[in-house]
Amino acid sequence: MNTNRTFKALGTVMDEFSEKGFKVVLEFVKFIDSYENYGKNGRINKLKVKKEKNTLTSNEEYELNELLPINLETLDTNG
Image (cartoon, rainbow, N blue to C red; front, side, top):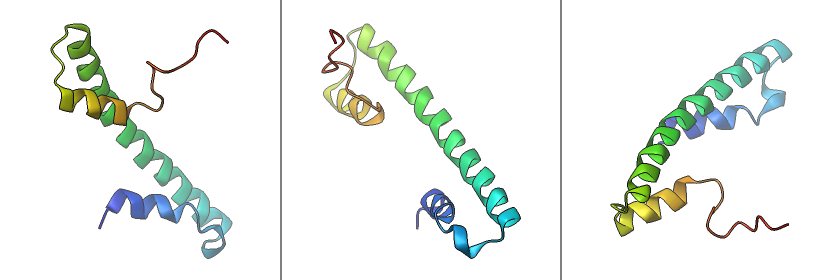
């Protein structure tokens, strides 16, 4: 069982909690999400450094693309 996913799912069942209880759950869900993002951002930064040094393996390149919220290489920045 993925505990983080379970806690995040609590944030979607608003009518199961009192207003105060829901706010507590929502704050906890935000904390879990922030904590999860912190770890992902650290890994993204390490992989980006390896990419800049041209030492990124194909598996690491795949991992980096999966971790990024968007694919920067296909992003159209010309408008």
